[in-house]
Length: 278
Image 1 (cartoon, rainbow, N blue to C red):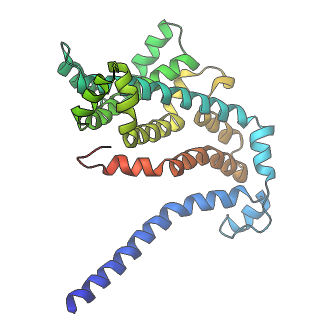
Image 2 (image 1 turned 180 degrees about the vertical axis):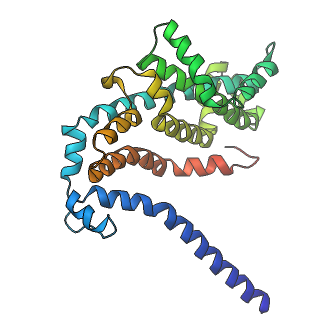
Image 3 (image 1 turned 90 degrees about the horizontal axis):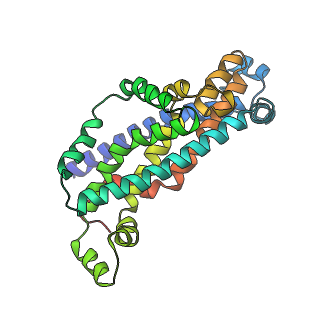
């Protein structure tokens, strides 16, 4: 009886702790959205701590249409989409090759990818910038190539661990049916590692969407800038307009939140997958 009471008390305190942590994470986002729907006068009075009663959607119109924030949003969407597609294709092919094929230097090349994960990202920004400048690939193309390169190492490592767990019998069955190595990768391998692909997509989409330092180095034209670089310029121009800044931040945060909510099942399965895949 005493053991059950202690267990119930422990569970209650655990849930209270977890709920407090969740609220501490959610509150800043709720406060940001609340401020974005206020007028500047209302914000000066309550600092966004009172629930808004008359939402002011004019802030979003001012940010997206009048200030041209839609251009930064569209740029980030294109860069993120193209980069994630490249990373998924290249990393899944490379991971499948490392897992299933035998070729000279296989282990050495794989360990080189693992070693690249140990290099701090800012340490490679200057060499990457210099290299792309020499080839005339700055701005859009260079940014996509650089972000693709940044996301490859961890993506290859994650996908290889999943491909290693696939039973060989599936490949033998596909080979009997006349599938080539490429067809086996597409029809057998990829569908069975979808949880890992979900993690790869979310991780890299978040990385590209939120990248600021490299974007600030790469882009010389305002019309090419992604969301985070444009957001920095916008916040500097609207330094006293807190409601407009919060509206811009909300626009920047919502796509990643929707992506995570859409793919949360694959994300959780990818992080908690056991020894059996498929």
